[in-house]
Amino acid sequence: MKRMIHWGLLASLLLVAPAVVVVQAQQPGPSKERAPPAAKITEEQAKKIALERIPGKVTDVAIEKKGGKNVYVIEIQSPEQGEKDVFVDIETGKIIGTD
Image 1 (cartoon, rainbow, N blue to C red):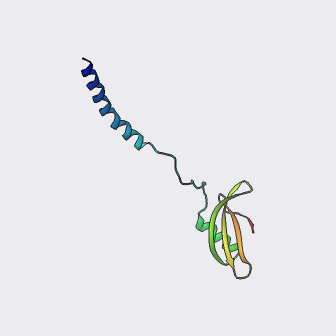
Image 2: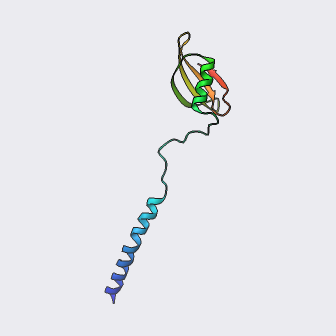
Image 3: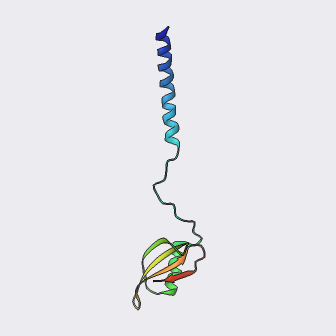
């Protein structure tokens, strides 16, 4: 009798264990990528806005927080002004400042 119980438990375990593994594999895990903030203007639009302020060549683009707002930081190499950063508000497209 005990042997039948042991075999029954073993059979149940063998049937349930693969289902648990499948369910765990289908659940999304934590993302390793940083989610970008919701942007109302694109990176290309931000570059165009920045180049209207400081003509030159865009060398880098990043997203940072300035004054509590998410901004595109557009790095421009300008023949007249050297290397400059232009901060473009990610939601409105307005230039917040330059550096």
